[in-house]
Amino acid sequence: MTDPADRFLEERLHALARGVGVPVVPAGDDVRRGRRRLFRLRVAMAGATTGTLAVVVGVTGLTAGDPKATEPGQFTHPPTSLPSAPTTSPSSPTTDPSAPATERTDKGGGDAKPGNQPDADPATETTGATDPGRTGGLPGSNDPTGAATGGATIVGTTHGGGSPGHHHGPSTDPTETPGASDSPTTTPSGDPSTDPTGTPTSTPSLPPTGSTKIRVYQVLRYYNDVLAEHLDSARTHLQPYDRTIDVKSTRTANGHLYALGSTYRWEDGGSPSGLDITVASGWDQVDWHCGASYSDWICHAGADDTTEFAEHDGVLQVAVAHASGQIVILTADPGSTVDSSQSDLAQAAADDRLILPGAAPVAPPVIDAAAFAAAGAAQLVGTGESFDQSGLDRSPWVRGVWTSAQGDHGTLAWTVEPIYSRGRFTCLTSYRTCKEVTVDAFGTTVHVALLRQRAGGGWLVQYDGGSYGVRVYCSSPKFPRKRAYAFITQRDWQPDR
Image (tube, rainbow, N blue to C red; front, side, top):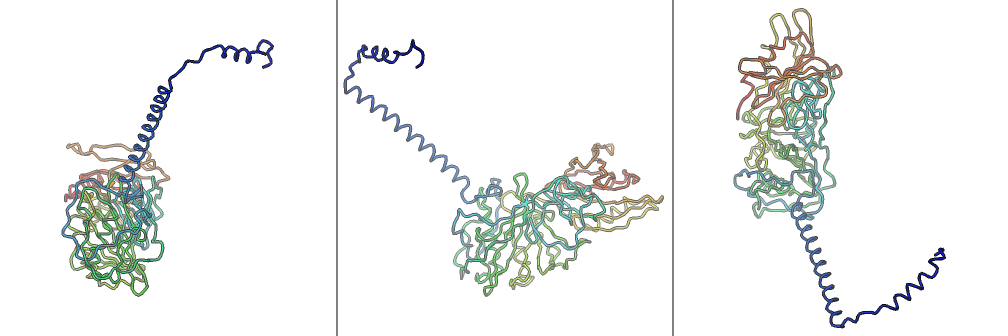
């Protein structure tokens, strides 16, 4: 203290304190007060510990068995019943439930090796990533006629898996992608380490849709058991599903699972290879290029019109369309030692137990590509005009060059995309203007958009029906749009399942 007035303050305070009498407190009261303080402290500590344990147990219960936050681990929709369980031994559970699984997530699954695929096409642009080859789908497309292209999954892909949407077209057309979706591209990591389990002794304990809470790993283990029943009942080659080794592929959007698959290990004398399965809600969710004009796949039909085989890049694939509209694709990797015959693979893929878990999205019936192409050529191309078709696939998607009687010409394309996944019209940033036009006395409304020059120019029209979004695109402003209005609003393009 530097103030002279406060020089002796401390001494005065001590003198004042010595003059104050200290109250006498009985020792018993002092002990009771100390005990009450100790009791309150112990109660507070016990309460805090109990609350912490409750939080930990709750979080563990919610996340146990599915540590990936980005994958659809559980579904609480009403369950879908399955036929009886397979009779082979169940796949072995993961040795370490907490270990991370090798996975591909496609928001929207498969990565069959495409052949000579064209670049993006304004005839099939929507709001997702490009996936040349097909139209329709869940997360993405880059083609103004409405064929969505996908790749997310929800998005890396397996052989035979596919994006929720697709598109096509040569590079001379607009290639701008309004939005991109992630495409799973993860490949299996590590060498197979699990030994065959020998002769089957029991049946799977939990069908994939046997409860209201569905765990993806249990479903993939169930798929493995079903395939073993058909292809390797003795478990000599097909290894049980192990989530820490076997690649998982999913395709999701808006809380729905559109495709699910995995690559299982097939071993023969120490030479490992892969057997891939993809179960999808419809053709729009898989990359299947049979019948496409740009594809170099070698394809042939199976015993009936629901089965198709494809060979490309050393890969053998079989696709089976189930009565529900769901598609099952089995793929034997290049150099695979999978020695099952094509008929055995087809029989396995046709098993009714191979379905998506829970309340899976339902795809509409497929529109015949040849009929769609012929109808478009007949109704969109007038007398004295010509149409030189350059692209076709089973989406269906059709593309070519239109020439008028006066010599005007431009790209003309028409396609469909399922409404259930992401076929509805969206006004993109690549469009200069968007508007709705009423085209008949019944109040039928179509969407009309003018494209920016950097997106290829021209215009497109789309009608959103109950099953499909039907779209026509033309790069020439001379093309009469009223023809397109009549074509896209036809009832024939809205089949019901």
